[in-house]
Image (cartoon, rainbow, N blue to C red; front, side, top):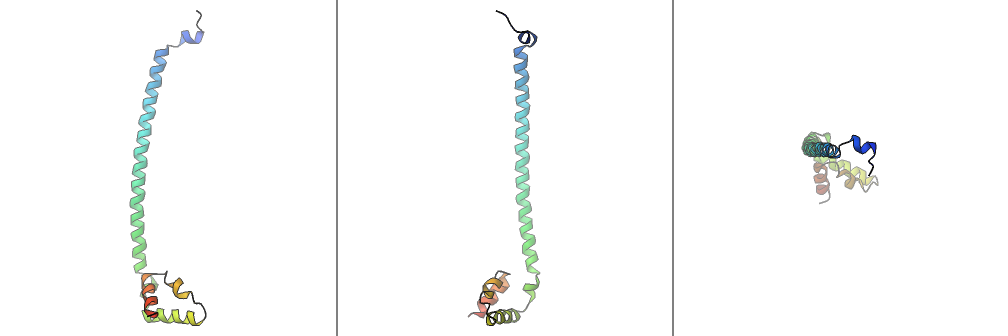
Length: 107
């Protein structure tokens, strides 16, 4: 039986061992990538928590929260008197203070 020159030049077992070594390296890299992605997801979650807190704190110092409730109620009434009947609903989305005023103004 004749063998090709390629078969005679290459030790099949040695090549298969090299393939196994490269597969092991590839698997190790894949595991490292998964660990890094898990860390990234954890950090993204932590960041989102802090950004939520920032929005909450910013909401505490908005101008809308510093306006007296009487003034807010007057704004609501003027808008409704002007024909914009959705004003209380729209304005109630601004902040909890505005929702309270809306609730008080319709009691």
